[in-house]
Length: 552
Image (cartoon, rainbow, N blue to C red; front, side, top):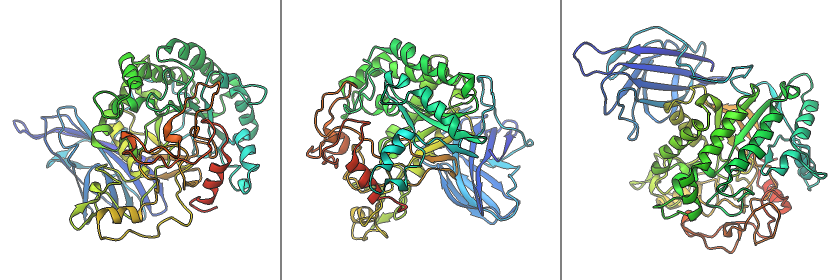
């Protein structure tokens, strides 16, 4: 956090005005601009709507906002609640964020008004993160000032492909997707081997290593391609045979100089919101996992044990906008993340941040339409593609989810990661401008970068390309763009293939499949002849190179 202020407001005696605290934090600064996050907490009487006002002392101009309606007249800024966050009970909080331009000093405002009541009090450090492990030497952003580990196994596969040397030195994550991956084998590096190699790459500077922790019991209950080795009830094995050995290795003093970034258990938790009874997308396996609670227990245990090492930075998977962006999924999923992060001895302080779009294809930023656009009086939200979603891309979703999580009690310095390994959608089919305004569907479909048949399609997508190269602090609230899914590794097999890794066959990976309720009964859009998940898929890698954006 670059700067922040906390102010306290009190209403007059006998009035129904609220008291409040306001936490204003600058989250990132760049040449000519900055991003900020504001959390307002009502400490007085409940209110059904709110307006927050402040005045800048410098040249700051708000240019873009989320989770509040922001207007500015001269130096005076007004932020009003939006439809879904206006009600604040006593102790209730709402968070919103914005980007702004600035020249010269970026002074933090020191006075606020909530519903006309002045927030009195001075500057302060803001609310702390609550109970935590010994702080160690954790930095605000583990990617800042650090190189990132290049996995030599992935690098060699990429370099062996025609044109692959253009990206083979990019950092990608190491996936620990089964117990055997911890030890490794005669043909694959184990966790210690990767960390030893990371020490060599580190040299005298700082280096971050990215690990995917991915082996929950009954994993990915709504998708068959990525089912794992542990059954729904094997939480004991998950703890003793999987998490405990990983935690012991990460705690080895030999590796204390590495910044170890974990992506904790992709995909599973949101299934307990979206794919359980009575949803039309429910599966029996997800109902079982909701009933036994082993997803929450597993994630909480992992956060608690891994977070004991002061050089480990836990980032929890938070789905993507095409899954959780709808009103009935968004807040419920955030609550689910909090539940898991306070289970099995974990606290919110064990979570350094969240990651979105892991191993998915959602566009980073759609430039040719916004959620507020309309065509002939019809909102973009009513288009078949957006389908009443509140977000159109991953950047807006990540920033909004971050604000929501902070409002639920996660640390105000929470950082987000976005997996951009396969969401570039470049090549000759990339739209250069908006679609025609003949209808809202023509407008959206003609201008959208994401060219999937349906947002619910996730397996080996035809036409996908490499996205933004990994980089640090690219936007407000975002710690880094990362390549967590190594480009060229399959999402799942196009047909059933017997294997010893516990991975099943999901028809969503079959290019002839005509779909189910999760993808609007659309064609799957998958590439043919794919191997099982995690195995090298040369045709996919070549597709990603060809359609990279920015172009290679």
